[in-house]
Length: 440
Image (cartoon, rainbow, N blue to C red; front, side, top):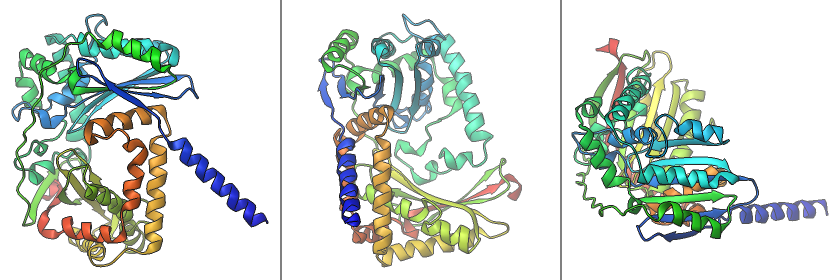
């Protein structure tokens, strides 16, 4: 009887959790092309207002790299109705928080306020879109901010070239604009004129190249009217045509050495060019990353860090992107272990993936971990707003917020073996030895 009660209780919580995870939303377009997504959740008095623009580092002129990331900073400078330097003061003094981030494919801004400040969030984002002040003072100020960020995160940070891609992307891509990093070139920013910054804003930061998400404690009808009031008058931009050059397949291992004056311990990077984020194979590669290096019981960590004591750290991840993705495996040796040993041990695990099916136990563990990650990604209003915007803009399927887990569930052990065999081959990769400057 006790076992029956526990089983029924477990089933109840499973069903309840499944229902709780269903994210209801409504989406529509304004006449100026702005796509709007609304999610109502009145369980807590907070609301997130976010705008994602379909512009990232891949949209830049090859002679003006860093513009998209630069604009992440520049569009906080001020607007026609928000004085320069006052943006963050307005947010904090009204009980809110805000941030922004840029990738190769998109730029994302958001504010989270108490729900009685919904109008404020909408007004601020409409100001950013309609009335940004782009002048030489702001450009010069943010130029110094971006330079300092690059110094801290890339130039003077251990393994910065690996973490931010400056040591990887130029070798993995030869034609596509993924060949430069999001941080871009400081020389390009220095050389840019004010007119170039204004032209970049006029082209990309327009309603028909954006999605607005309002999620949280809202009334749908009231919010729709406010959105019309604040965003309806923003003029539509010119259509954006993207036609990026394709990459030829990698058919022979690319061997490269890079040096970093900030490190004492060398690193090995094995990097593969993989399919677009919308392809099912990209999901399978995400699963392979989890299997190989997520947690202390993962295959590479257990083998190289725990058992063989050959690695200080090892991790694998699929950096999913709109046109091509990048599958990266990074490892740091322990003591005087050679990088060639790390390469051999990593390749042994990849070969197993390519020739054997993972165990049923490991497969179920993988599914449980992915389901937990899926639930957690939608556990906050900010997380939901981000997922809704990303799924619409980069996957063209807003409802992935509810169905993405089904893609992972549909992946079989055979799929895992076949995808590893298709993409993770020696002749299809970049092998990068990342060494201390003293090793020259």
